[in-house]
Length: 241
Image (cartoon, rainbow, N blue to C red; front, side, top):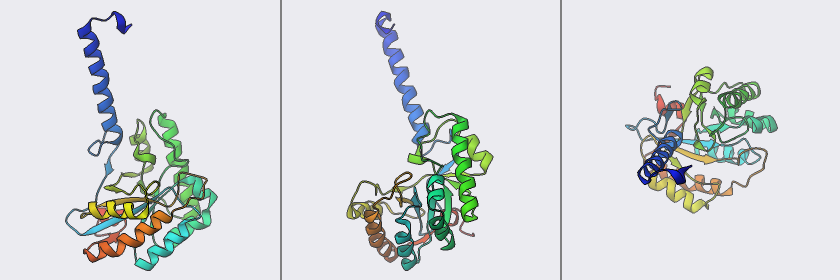
């Protein structure tokens, strides 16, 4: 059909498609976008507080991270996948018992782009029920898998009373060695930053998180020396909690 279009019309159509893709891409991942529901990217910028968030667990490697965080006196926010909680309910309970905050990270860790609103709601609702029934914690925070938001997410979050949480710094710890993860976090740390690392790799797998553990061991003491302290996401957003 486009072969029969005049040159100007073809250029206009192409420009429109490109512009639409840019707008949609911003809505899906853009920091200032609330199109698919409100999300926070940082906490209080007036205080030297940081929030360490941990995605995709629980996994068989989570206890090692819990031990490390306890040694450093850090309370983190764990965004858990329902499927992993069902697989490892005892470890999920260990996270809760240690006083860490627990958030919802969907049930099966899918990308939400091009998914129906009902599918998105079921993913959040199933994870919500799984986490609550196994840990006693009813999450109030949600992080979209891969950070991808889509139509229907706003409604699902509202129905379940969930606030979207993205990140200020993502460590890319599924890909990078500990030294590079640490360098990225240290270079970008600032008041109110929300740091995203991982204790799992999606669902139903036993990941090697040695790079994550190495980075945490390195950055926590250094950030403390800079005058920062660690809080949960809820605390960094509402410091009176």
